[in-house]
Amino acid sequence: MRTLFILIALCSSLSTFAAQPNIIFIEVDDLLYTYTSVWGSKTSPTPTMDRLAKAGFVFDQAMCQGMMCGPSRNSLMSGKYPHQLGFYQNGDMKKLPEKTWTLPHELKKNGYTTAWIGKSHLKPFFANKKAKTAEDTFNEFFGFDHSLHTLGRALVGDDDREEGGKDSGPNPYMQFLEKSGYLDQYKADAKAGRNSTIPEDAYLDGWFAKNTVDYIASYDKAKPLFLWVNFSVPHGPYDVADPYHQPFENAKMPGITKVENYEHPESLIKRTRSYGNEKKAIEDQRGFHANIAFMDHSVDRILTALKEKDMLDNSWIVFFSDQGVMSGAHGLIHKSTLFRPVTQPSLIIRPPNGIPAGKRLSQPVELMDLLPTFLEIGGMKSSKAPAGVSLTPLFKGEPITRTHTFAEIEDWIVVSDGHYRLIRSVKDEGAFLFDDLADPENLKNIAKDKPEVVKSLGEQIDTWLKQTGERLKPKTM
Image (cartoon, rainbow, N blue to C red):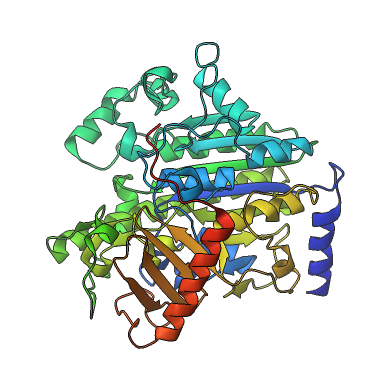
C-alpha cells in the first residue's frame, strides 16, 4: 500500500503532460445503489462495477447535490449548489450565467484535451446563438474540445431538435437514426411500448458507447484526456433489448416498503408518484434491473477500449450517478426528494493501475468534491473549484476536512454526517431524522428520540447556508 500511495501522490503533483493521468468520468442516470452487487444486491449482478470496486475506492456515504438530472449535472459542472443557481427542478433554469466557471475549462488550461459524449441536461449560455451551432456553443461555453450531446431516452421521443428548443441545432441522435435507416423502427418500438428491436449500437446508450469507443480508438495519447461520458440508462423507459430482460423475468424483486411512524409532507414528495399496487412496482423493478445490466455492459465497453488503447493503466476512472431514485421505497417512484435511495450517487473511484482488493470508505463526501480532487490530480494545485473538498488525502490514507454533506430541493435541505440524516423544511414544515446505517430506506423518523442530533445537524445546515450564500428562488430564465 505504501507504494500505491507514493504513486498516487506523484500523479497528483507532477505537471508535465507525460506524467498527467487521464481522467474519465462515467456518469449514469437514476441508478439506485442498492440495485448493484457492489452494494449487496443478490438479484442485480453488475460485474463491471464490481471490477471497479475491487480496484478502487467505494464511497458508502456519498451525496449528490441536486435531485433531478438538470440540477445535479449543472451543479457539478459549475461548482455551485442548486440554491446558488436557483436550479432545483429540470424546468427551473434555461441557461447558466454567462461567465460560469467549469471544470473542463480549468483542465484545458493545464494541457488536457476535453470531451463530452452522451446525454446532456447542461444549460449553456447562448451568447451568440445566431453565429454559432449548438455544438460550437456547447463546447465554447463548457470548455470541451469535442462533444456529442443529445437528450436522454425519456425525452428524446421523435423530436428532431435539441433541448434548447428553436434556438438549438438538430438532434444528432435523430439524425443518426434517419441516416442509418432505423428511425421508423425506433418510432414503432416507442409507439408500441415494446423493448428495443434496433441493433444495440443504434439504441441511444449503445450509440453513446460506440461513439465513445471510436473516440478513444482515434485519440492521440500524446496529451492527457479528460473524458466525461453520460449514459441515459438505467433511467426509464425500461426498454433495452429482450436479452437483457430475460434473466429477470421471474426474479424476486424488492417490491414496496412503507414508512413506519410518519406521514410525508406533500412538499417533500410532490414530484414523486405512488404505486397503485405492488405488481406494477415489481414489473418496473425487473425492467430497471434490465437497464442496469445494459448500463454495466456499456461501461465495460469503455474500459475495454481504454485498455486496448493502452490508456487504462494511466487513467482515473470515476463512476457515479447523477442521483438515485425511489423504486418502491415508501411505496413511491421517481426522485426530487431527499431520502437516501435518491441522494446516494453510487460513487466509485478507481486510480491508475487500481489498488489491491479495493477499499470501502464511510467518510461522507459530496459529488462536488470531485472538482478540487481532479484539479489537483490534473496538476492544478493553484486552481480552486468554487465548491468541494479535495479527496486526495483519502487516497493516501489520510483524513479530509469534510464532516457533513448537503443536498436540496426547493422546499427542503438534507444534511448527513455519515450516520444520521436530517431533512429540514425551509418553510417551517418540520424536520425528520433518520439513521442511515440502521434504516437506509429512511422508513422510521427518530427526531423525537434524538433531539440533540436534530439540533446539531440543524446547526450544520445554518452554517452551510451562511457559507454558501443566499438561497435563490427557482429561476425560469
